[in-house]
Length: 194
Image 1 (cartoon, one colour):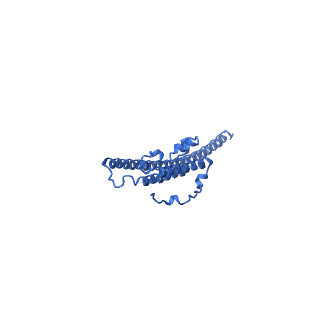
Image 2: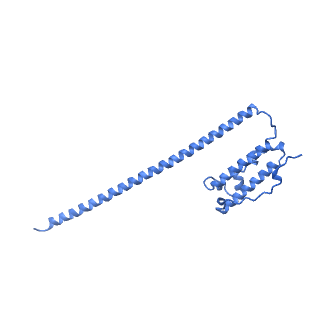
Image 3: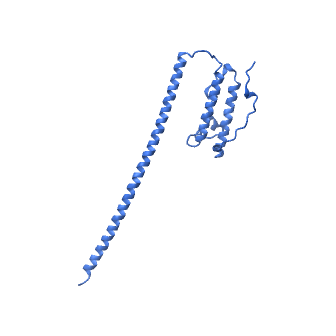
């Protein structure tokens, strides 16, 4: 007897396309493609027999940006933090959701078993790598912000110095003009007969 699942008895409601996905035709196409990929992966996880769910390779249970762009013969750079940050964030969220769905599908397999030492060590190493990568990312972001801040400060200082030099230049020009007038006046006085 199969388990009861509410998913089998509830009609799926079409999600409206978010505003950020409607910003350009390309973004809209990419968003819809990501949604389709997510639905295909979800169906794959749900329709795979319990014993084989754990054997689904990671690339088959995750939305891969390059696969999405290849579908439209676009460059991989069309899905980047710089160009479409909301889409990248959506892909990460969907991948997390799909990964959780996959983990939930794997729960029944070998449950009650204590993980082996090598599995625990591998999990620990994986978590340490993730932590190290997150620290590196945080440091990278922090240093980028501090460099931007320092550049802005140095640009302000240079702008102030430039204004001071311009003011000094104007003052010196006025002095020079006044001296020219004084010299011309003195020469006229010398040249006038007495």
